[in-house]
Length: 252
Image 1 (cartoon, rainbow, N blue to C red):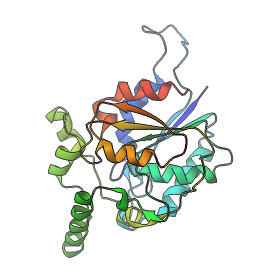
Image 2 (tube, rainbow, N blue to C red):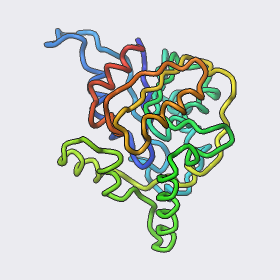
Image 3 (cartoon, one colour):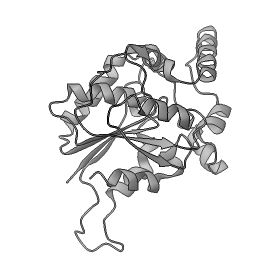
């Protein structure tokens, strides 16, 4: 059976995949029989360095190489086989680089509104100009205040969680952590040739952080990519967890 490794977006953590994990690991039958087969084998939502349960130290100083190594280590440590590797947001660039360092390529790579910069450019460079300007302002303010650089609560509600129930937004805001500023501004090296496995790009059509046209542009940087659409804001794992899980399970 297929294993899944779920890699979260910037400032988030394994917590963001909780509902998707539930749908992927649910029995195939409802109500389930005793020992009913599951939809997937192992489903492992990981915390990148500086995020979630691994948020010790300065998240802003976490290096790109640390994040990529943590992905390859998770595959080895958890013994993940027949793997579908899933990256959300800034994890798109991370998983694209990580696949070349795995002992064997994944069965499939799935990018959910994944950031795919031009090779030798930063992930920040692939974001809309309005986001880049706001991000630079946040980093300056965080240095002056000597506090972590974070998404403002209003930005989380308006750009990442638009369309969600207000109480769900309030709940989600409390889990968001510092942004990995060094990772977002580091140059990333992506191979020009086709990836060593099939790639699916999930375009989130209601995403206000990374508009659908920007997502489609980045998807087209990947040779032979499969593009599918999901009517969701950027936080599809929170807003449309079942629909996202249904897309992912097709590759099991």
